[in-house]
Image (cartoon, rainbow, N blue to C red; front, side, top):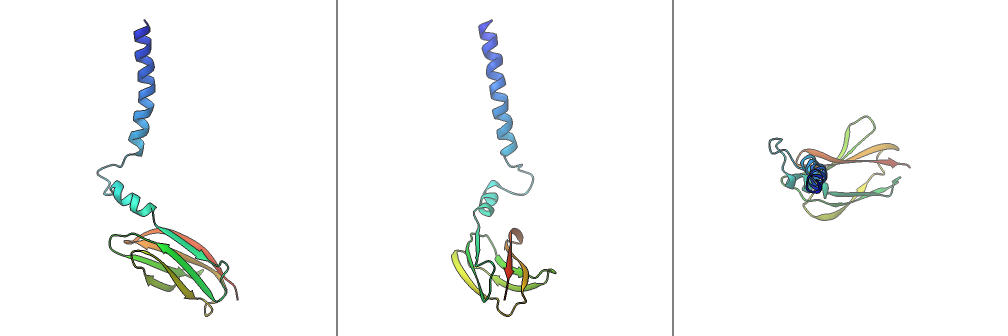
Length: 124
């Protein structure tokens, strides 16, 4: 009786662990490997000052396979700035004094995949 009870308890403890491992694993047929997911998760982007007046500083630390791109969009979705980034940690200093005051969106794209979008306010 004790052996049967221990076996049932063991099975009840193992099944949830097995199920959680199955939900966290990648499907091998979805076209994305766990390595590419990890690469996308480690990209870093920091923008300051916010609100910006004359200059916007962009700190980035990117690791990519083909191409990394930083873009700034105005509030109606038009691209007002584009820069191809180097694969490393670096800074950009973007002059925004010629942009109209308002809300802008900054995006980081790695290999054509949009990874990060941040809002900035330009206020003159």
